[in-house]
Structures are given as structure tokens and as C-alpha cells.
Length: 200
Image (cartoon, rainbow, N blue to C red; front, side, top):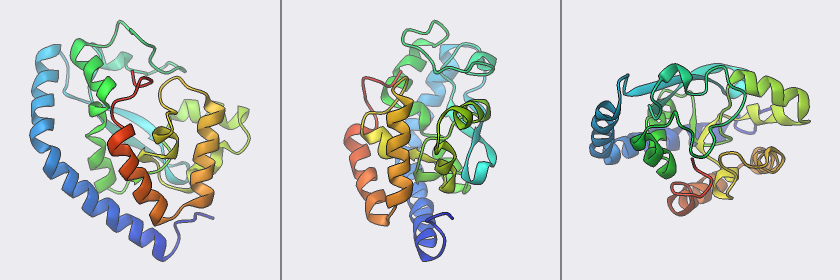
């Protein structure tokens, strides 16, 4: 059973709505600048969409600023994360990934109710299926909404890092969820959630 049933879930959703609206207003000028930079950096759409797995195993389209030369190459069909110095990443895209600013459009996923501000990071369906077979307890992550940031991320588990350690942090979050923990993670994200050596 999801720990977010009842009043706690309602409170978390209200934080998501007002938090995402506030962040969209604050970051709107920056997102406009990024959109122009992405458009000028290479041919292709400004936004990139990809299927991800969320609450209860439901899939949704996650939004990101495009960071690669060819949209169809950005993770589609690959069962691995983007590597350091990946030649497909544009110059602007490399900076966006390093600062995590390519993730800002996910504020609209949060506003739509497909994601939360805080929760385990969503994986692609094919990766989730692979991890389900290989890692005991992995599917418990789907008892809460996927998040823009999470307990694993503020503890350095980003990019091509240990899946076991990341899963441990995610399961800790699911088991010990509270509004206080969410607020703590959001606060830590301001200092640890944007620029990080593992973000590439």
C-alpha cells in the first residue's frame, strides 16, 4: 500500500501544485533563455519527451530540454545511461546536464500530477523491467510517485552510480516518507541537487 494514501497524500499534492507553479514562475526567464540556446545549438525540437514509469507502474511522457544532436538517439533503444564525454551531447546540452537545468520542464509533469517534486527518479520501461528481474524490492519504488529529486540524488546517487545503493536510498524514502523528509530533501536539493560531479 502506498504511504501517500489519505491526508498525507493530499498535503504532498498541494505542495507539488504550489511548489511547481512557484518554480515555473521563478524559472520562466531562465527557461526561455535555455529554449533559445537549445534552438540555436543544433537542429531539432527544443523539448525532448521520453516514456518513463511512475506510480503503480503507469507510464508517462517525461519532459526535458533536448541535450543531444539527434532526439531519436537520446536514450531510445539503449539499456545504459549516458556516459561522460558522450559525443551525441551538444555543447549547450553538456552544460545543461552538468547543472541539471535540462530537468526544469519536469515541473510541468509535476503540475500535471504525473510526477512529484520529491520521489524516486523514474526509469524507462525497459530498464525498469530489467531491474525488476535482477533487483529484489525494486518495484516497491512504484508505491510512490516518481520525483524530480529524491533521497538518493541528494546523497550523490546520480548518473552511472551504484544501482544497489540508489535502490537502498529509494526504499528508505518509501518506508520513512513524511512531509518533513520531503521538505528536507527539497532544502538539500538547493545545495546538492543541481551541480554534481556525477551529473553528465
